[in-house]
Each structure stands twice: as structure tokens, then as C-alpha cells.
Amino acid sequence: MSGAVLSLLGTGGAGAAVTITLSTQFLYALSTGTASAAFRLNTNGNAEYSENGGAYSVLEAWCVPAAQAVNYECYASLVSGLATGTFDTWLALSSSRTWTVTQVTIGVSDAVINIGIRRAGDATILASADIYLTAERY
Image 1 (cartoon, rainbow, N blue to C red):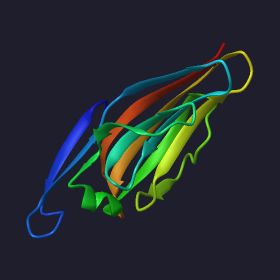
Image 2 (cartoon, helix red, strand yellow; image 1 turned 135 degrees about the vertical axis):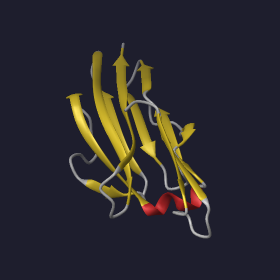
Image 3 (cartoon, rainbow, N blue to C red; image 1 turned 60 degrees about the vertical axis):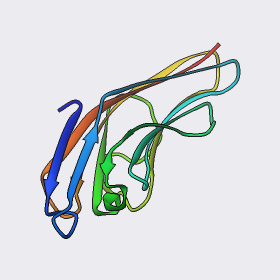
Image 4 (cartoon, one colour; image 1 turned 180 degrees about the vertical axis):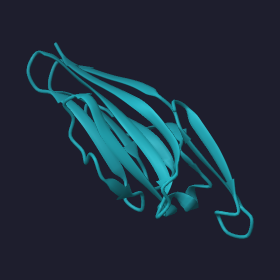
């Protein structure tokens, strides 16, 4: 489910609502040196992007309120291409999780990664999206 949003009542304590959002992203990095495109689910509740090893920029808040992010897990599947990061296992989002595509020589590398998010210990996937990463060195 692309661009999924789910609000949960009562899961954040004291009747607080928690919103989990994950949108499809198309991320591209271009460089005359090593090119890299990185996607990160941060512990601060943000989905972020870094180009060529630079600072991360916020794409969206995947968890609102952010303090609830530690109660969730993600699962990444490599749909196509080559990427670094952890795949095919549930990972606690009490730590930031990053997936990267890198191109060292002249040319293009890309990958499609499907990421799902669930509450820790629950089987229900609350949001999922495809992340398209492309790195081009010219």
C-alpha cells in the first residue's frame, strides 16, 4: 500500500493518537565522484534522505508523535537492484535504519526497496511504500 496512513487510538498511552505514514519516494543523487542515495527511518520519527554522503533532509514524519517511534519496527525487502542495508528481517526502530545505493565508477546504480512498518510485537503492517533509490556518477 503506497502512501499509507494509519491513526491508532489508545496505542500511545493515555488515549493518545499515533499516526504512521510512509509514502513512495523517488530519490536521485548525481555526482562527478562517488554518488550515493540514502533513505533513513530515523528514531526521531522522520523519514529522511541523504545525497552523496551529505546531511540528511526530512522527507516526511513517519511517526507522529515522534516519541512513539521506539515502539515500532520496519521490514525492508529488496525488490530490485543492489543496495546496502538490512533486508528480510524485522528491525526495531529504536535505532535509525538506513538503505543506500552507491555508484563508484561512471554509470548508474538503482534499487527499489519495499519498506513496511508495524507496532513491535504486532503482525499488522500499518504502512508500507516503495523507495526508489538511484545514484549516478558521470
